[in-house]
Length: 477
Image: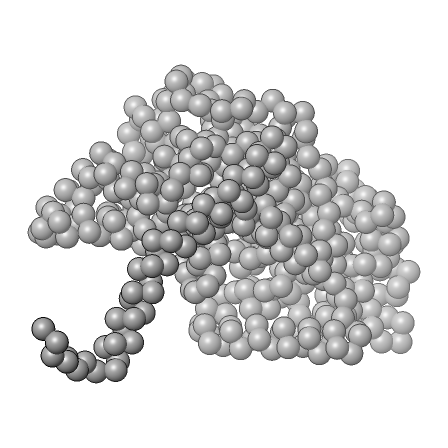
């Protein structure tokens, strides 16, 4: 009984660490969890009454409980059975995949992180890089949204800054849950994104079982009233234009929607634009960036931020112009289906997708109608009318002023900084001269031939408006 037993030092150290961890897990971890939970509850008690679109209990459900709810959902279990049969694999293996997919998709929303830490960070980043402006909001329409309705922000996708910009401007109204691509699944960004309430999506996956799990999560979240934000184009615009809608997420939200008994789903159009998109030169303007590969894109991004740092140190750095967001007229899913006399649950897959395609098309039209017309886009539009022309400053400013008037006449959402058109023209010219897309020599301005693609990118953001000027109408007459 008193004999000595020798053990290796490493084993003694491991045993000691395990013992310490056991004591901490029993004594300190519950206290830490209680402390964090109390901070979250206090944040909710303070913030939720002020929000125009309140947070639903679903967002505060423990992540593990949401995962289990998804894994044992009847529709998901039926999909797992079908997948196991089709792939000739044991049912347990298919169920294990379901759990892995659920853990990958389900977020872990933290109200304290979102409203206390996230808001401050989003505000600082957005305002450090841009002159941020909220152009227009239909307050009356927002006030009419029923308290139990599920609100979905539908936006054009110009930049990865969209996530930060819209979250910052919407944070006084609600908390947004984004569908985020696999690009963000790197440590520690993944944990941060999850805590902000975002869920991950494999956008190009054709795996039937994964799609079944994802669709059920989106359906459940929508039915439980989670406020979501989606990009119907499916990805960043590569040429600056508003792209055709992808219908997957819309279908997940609406395929089980009961227009008579379910809480309404309200789609809120959001239009945004920038005087400078951070990724414009690496953002696949004409598809060439894809061929360069990720390392080349990363190198370009690092070179860009290195140049910005150099300019900041030398005192020659300027913010990237204006970033503007407009909120448009909501569209009710209940009213949409009622006007057509249809119930999405009773439509065939083909008919349902045709109907949802029309809904998505109408939403994109509403988004296009409120995309802000900013100075750089207007200047680029004028310059591309005759790329070889050399303009005097007076001629160019007059043409830009006329183009602004044409957009306003057409009903476009023109944002005029300081309500001063002369200043708006100067902003657009200065931004393009600083970027060497517009060259000035001997008092004459001419587009840089090497940057015509860049000018087209910014002009395309508002190309759907046309904006025929008085002089053009005169020439046609």
